[in-house]
Length: 139
Image (cartoon, rainbow, N blue to C red; front, side):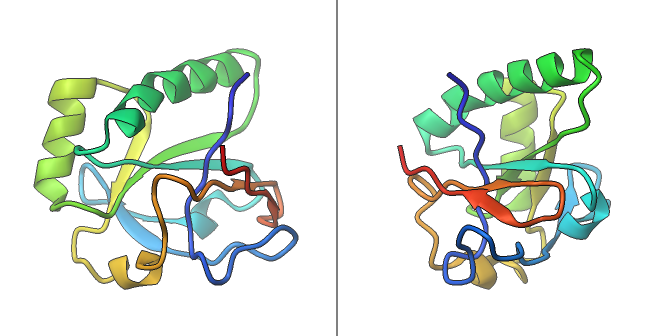
């Protein structure tokens, strides 16, 4: 069984409510907004270099992405790191994990406060095509 994860504002997120937008950067410094993916389901996975479970999940997300893409599906998968400096997290992901999934970072630390109340190990959400939170499994 595959569990799709998404981490976002803890206080504003609950099933049926719109997901709040965010602005982060990808590994090349390109600005990425949640609203860029409007109309497509989005899976966001929060990760950190110090979280072994997070690192173990990334290949599973890669497999899910490849399976969905291979079947003609239109689902965006994003790896979100807000816990560490941009370069450190980017380099770790490239050198230690290796994935073709889009990874996004809070390079300026401006978005980090929005995510401050989140327990990255347990907060899990799934967004549907209209960016309403479908569910938040905790296991």
